[in-house]
Image 1: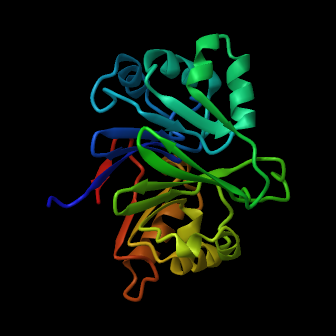
Image 2: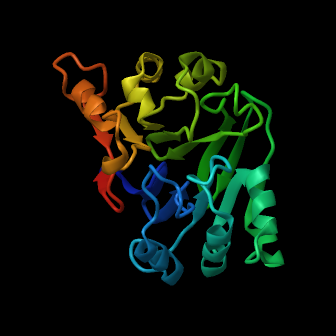
Amino acid sequence: MAKETIKITYVSCMGVLINYNDKNILIDSIVSPNILPYQTVPKQTLLNMLKKNEPFEKIDLILITHEHREHFQPDLVCQILSACPEARLVAPKAVIASLQQSRFYKESFVTQLISLDMDLNKSIELTLAGIRIDALRLAHDDEMQSFDIQNIAYLLHLGTHRLLHVGDAAAVAEDFKNNELFSKGVTTLVVPFIYVIAETGVESILALKPVHLVALHFPLKEHDKLNRYANAEEIKNATASPLPSSTHFLTECMQSITL
């Protein structure tokens, strides 16, 4: 039997394209062009989505973690939904409400949209396009200022793989424990870079014990005044690094890894 693989392609900020077998899943990949200091989606990449050019020939699922503009832009998402009527979109209710206010919104989208409204530390199980998804509301980073933000993490069951994309979830191991994630067998963890350079983030990684770690959301090189990327690299390359041996930092649009 051939070894199961997943391909992760970086798009922007926390945005990735996940390919597993014949399924394509976009997470937080359709964002505002004005999200400095972070990487946005190049115009050509957006055109490739709209024209269904490789690797976007088919988009099965669009998952959005929350409404912040470095994770979601309503007009662009509506245009992608029009171009990809096969796609189902899952997102918090605030995202859906923003879509409905877009000038590109169509009533026909109702068959493509799934709105989530969950209390903190609650979850729901979905099966879409033949893929099981556990959607979990985890506290947004800096919850004191973002208490009303529904940050939805997505755990994708992809054969023997369990891929968890946390959105902007706070790097707190206790939150993962409260959501029973320690028992879910997470094999691939997709997180913001803060998990790598903050003690609480490293504790969260160690508690989840993923085989693969993918860190995103780095500032662009010219805006990285605090040397976040260099700090993360130093921790990754340390002799006694606490990070998994399969750790990847993605910063260039359409950069891919296969696990």
